[in-house]
Each structure stands twice: as C-alpha cells, then as structure tokens.
Image 1 (tube, helix red, strand yellow):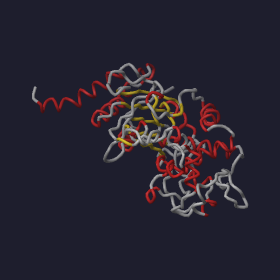
Image 2 (image 1 turned 135 degrees about the vertical axis):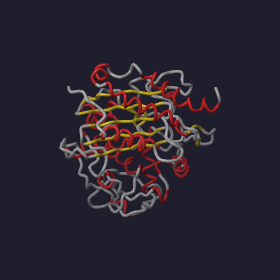
Image 3 (image 1 turned 60 degrees about the horizontal axis):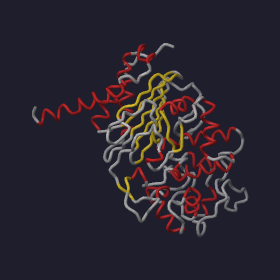
Image 4 (image 1 turned 120 degrees about the vertical axis):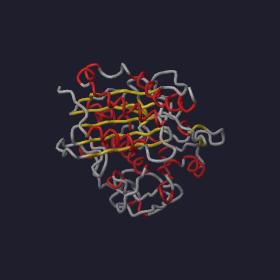
Length: 390
C-alpha cells in the first residue's frame, strides 16, 4: 500500500477504533427504540478523529429524560485503557452556572440580595466579605461592586487590559511573600489592592475573578464550604447522585479513576514549585483546587444534563430556575476552556439538552465546543433523530 493511501485510510481507522471502544456502551433500551442515535456516535467519532482528540463524552436529554450517554476514546495517554462509559472530566468554566445557581438559591432563601455589596470596605451599608486589601485598597470603586455585578461579569475587572489575575498565582505569591499557590483568600486580598479597569455595573467583561469572589460569598453566607453547599442545595434536590460532581484535582495521581488524562503539549512553571522543572500545563500550570467556583469542578455528562434541565446556564439569568415555557427556538449554552479541556453545556427550547466534554482544546483556530455545537444543532434542527416515546 502506498504512503498516500495509508494517510487516506488513517482517519477511517481512527473512527472505527473509537466506535469499537463504545460499541456496547449505549443504553440497551435507547438503542432498541432509536437505532439512529448512531448519528451521535458518528458525529463524535468523526469529529474526534479528524482533530486527534483522544477522549470525549456526549450526553443528551430529551423532555426531562436522559436518552443517550456515551464516552469515546481512551482513558490513558498510552491508549491502552478504554475510557469508562461513566467518564467524568474537568468542566472548566461550565462550573460558573453552578456557582450562579448557588447564589440564586441563597437569594431565594432571602439570605442575600443581588444588590448587596460584595466587599465590606467601610461603606455605610457594609458588605459581605471582610477582606483586608493587600497593602492598601486599590480602587474606591470596589466598594460599589454588587453580587449582581459579579454574576453578569460587570464587576469592573477587564482581563484583556491587565491579564487574568485568577491565573497569576506565582506573581501574587511572590508579591505577598506567601507560598505558591496563594489560595483563594490571598488572591482576593491581592485583587482588592489593584485598580479596576471599568466602572462596576457598566460594561461586560468576562471575569474569572468575579466568580472566584462569588465562591467566597457562597461560603460566607452559608457557613459551609463551597462544594458541600452546592451538593446539598443544588444537586441533591434534583436527584444527582453523590460522586457525579466533585472537586477537580491538579495532579494526575489525585484524579478520580473515571477521568482521562488531559492532553496538552503546553508547558508551564509549576505553581506548586515555581523554582522546579516545568510541567505540562494541565498538571500544575494553575491551582485547580483554588479554581473551584469558577473552573475547578469535575463532573459526568449525567450530572450536568440534570442541572441543565432545571437551571438556566448563561446570560443575565444565569442560575435562575427554568420556566419550562421557552419557545422552541430558545437556545442557551455555556462553554469551558482550559489547556487540556474543552466543554459545552447546551440548552434548547425544543426539550433537548446536551453536554460535550473533551480532554483537549485546539492550539489554534476556533474552540471545539463551538464546532461540535454547530454539528449537533444541525443534526437536531434537521429532525434526523427519532426520540423515545416514553
């Protein structure tokens, strides 16, 4: 066989390999009712093979029922162990709607108001978080930041201007003369010592720092750690089993056995050992535990599908309970992106929710989350899927 022929056959072989890894994994009842759920298999297999993505998962819900869950590819970098069908992966920013739902729960219980000030900086009304700014207050406008501002990314920080302080662990630790990583509270104190770039409430600028602060708000108001509050008040009531949503861990030896490796060639300083050798960015390029409320959770597609059925996933109403009266053309989604991670949580007004998790993000070009959304939405919009009647 010629070299050119081998190159042409390679993508086909990869698709077959991915399909073989999952050929027995679809729920039997769903497969019997709807053989054309194989469209989902085909989309995922081809999408992953053409982009050299080696671990992925897709879950689909129709009319409040999970009808499709499947994992594709490999658990390990050596590609010796098939990814388990109940795989879990890092969510990255798909964590944020979960934090939003926790804040809305506290609001519904009248434990906070969205117009409460976040920082207690001596203003007459006070504020929720009593944090001492590092060195001195960086901006008097910080006293005007409200919970609502943080929810809708209008807290006044603009990472396009000054960089993302949520990922400046080594710099912050050095400035504060504390061990790296500095942790959430020290990071918050450092941020309070820096100027804002925008008037709070004025312009939208996507902010990891804002959702870091919201995690601290959840803990301060509830008196519980963030994950415990989220599990007891957001996921337990909607029937998600414990163990389907967990704290992500920075290093592979601490990962859950259901997680794959996170695929990235990028190298970074180790925030846990800045003077030591560089590491693969997904494994020490940041403090994943410190990102718990804005990008640090790990979950199965099942857990996020159940969440999507109840809570709005994006927009100014992020975390609000869904009404169930959305128009058939209504669409919402939230994506997540970290080195070694690309995720999508999609809501549609026609009764379909779906979740896609990948263990890789592209080094150039558009995100996989946007590309796979276009392909799956096209499949759904063309009416090619028959759904279970019961």
